[in-house]
Amino acid sequence: MEDLSRLASHGPWDVVVDTSGYVPREVLTLACVLEPVVDRYVFVSSVSAYAGWPIEPLTESSPVLKCPPDADGDFGHDGDPGPSVYGFTKAGCERAVTEVFGGHRTMILRPGAILGPREYVDRLPWWLNRVRRGGRVLAPGEPGRSIQPVDVRDVAAFALLGMQTAGVFNVTAPGDETFADFLGACVTEAAPAGTELQWVADDFLVSRGVRQWTEVPLWRTYAGAWAVDATGARAAGLRTRPLAQTVRDTWAWIRQGRLVEHECAGELGIDPEKETAVLATWAASRF
Image (cartoon, rainbow, N blue to C red):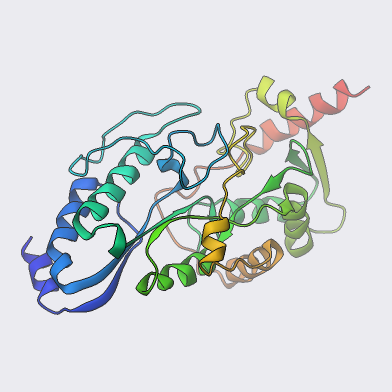
């Protein structure tokens, strides 16, 4: 608390952009201390705060998980699919900010999957490193499935509009690009000659125990996973770059070798032996 009071003594500021609030009671304390010296509060939340994600298509009016603004970081429960402790606590953080600053001084951003240079979750980097190994690459589900990952730089640019803009906004790409577009861009940037994408049906992967979102990053079969309406954000100034540009710039960053160490690194991606076995079984089932 002493550190927060010292921080507040250096104000006032136009806006605070909070990208790392996970524990509601801590965000509540921060908001209370900063409210007298900050005009606006921008909080980066998540689509996981919605009660219906990833099952149902979402708009900003979709129900949000219920979490008190003074909850600890372990509030809620995990479901598969369904709610998560992460989602509950993000919803609680949102409530903490809005209760202190009010809706007219608060901008809540709910992005989906965020990709781009310096990513530490290892979704896009995993795919780029996988296609770099070449060979037959397991490509999940339908090539034409639309996806909505958003570039971290586009999220940052939109967050800065919080100096003039208030409200709750979903922050995703429009959904006019597909998983085939995404993997095609990865192959273009990183794959050696002869690399082949092998598309495998959703139900086959599920029946073989391949875990969605973790073993095959960004693959999810549920109807709401990539059905997040962000027209409100685009009307307010959100601009999203083509997915191929995000892939290209991330690959350039990876080749620089200045990767971001994080506790999440290495947790995603299918084991190469399991991938080979799944592909062999899939090929055999086609004849």
